[in-house]
Image (cartoon, rainbow, N blue to C red; front, side, top):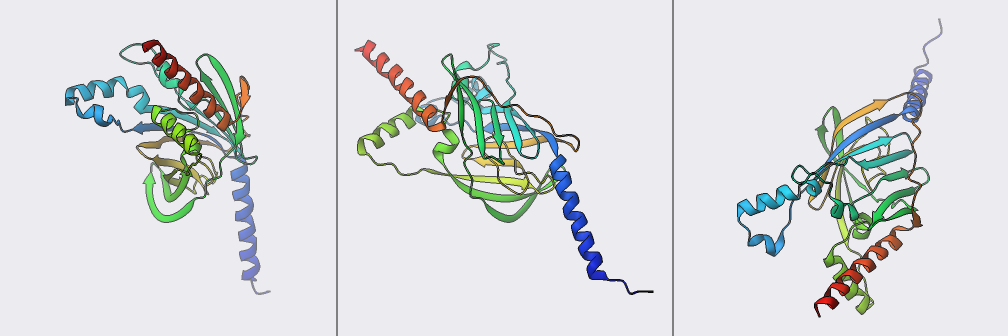
Amino acid sequence: MKPINYKFLTLLLFLFLITNVSVIAQDFNGKAIYVSKSKMELGNWGARLSEAQKKQVAQRLKNRLEKKYILVFNKQEATFKEDQKIDAISGATDSWGAYFSRGDQYKNIKETQLIQSQEFYGKRFLVKDNLYKIDWTLGTATKQIGDYTCYKAKAFVPYKELNWYNFSWADLRNQENKDSEKKEEENMIVVEAWYTPQIPLAHGPGEFWGLPGLILEVGVNNTTLLCTEVTINKGDKVQLEAPDRGTEITKEEYSKTIRKKMAEMRNNRMGRRG
């Protein structure tokens, strides 16, 4: 009887595992539900409000502070959409907030492609651009999220990459000051994420991707996105469709467009007062 070649068996086992992991990853399709919660910041104006008034404001802004999103994915593509809620008080959706919220999003991480639908004052835009590649630093800390063991990662991401579809009057003032000085320093935002290698796909909610496992939680400033449910299907590849309606535009061009429009509205209002 010939002696057992353990090195050869180990090599076969290694190749078997690698092959099967590749097949599993290739066939991975799924859906993840995320809940986004943001802390209310009222600034100096809020300091003048009573606790009862703050609660009323928080209730009125609940649709902006708490949102639900659905991520659907296969190996290289993902769509990320908000699950729209109806305001329990007014019976309407938050149309003003929707102008400056993330629209329906499609990501192709293999092609590093982003396609996102945005609507602004009745006009539909189709934002097409490259995905921003996040330079993650992997940590050793772990925690449990549902049935998954997650590992911590951290990154510094430019503010404009996380907020190109958003708007604030403070941003507009800062931009005008920078334009007048002809100098702009990059504002970097700290991002903390928790990912699970148990789902070996580089997807995540919103703008976040590129880790060796699905991102189940991410925190940015005063907002946390937490995955509350994951469904995995290891069958045929799910076909995902990207948004295809609207005026094509880049992220930078879209940001300039909405800031220009808001500046015009401000100037017109000030002109009428004069």
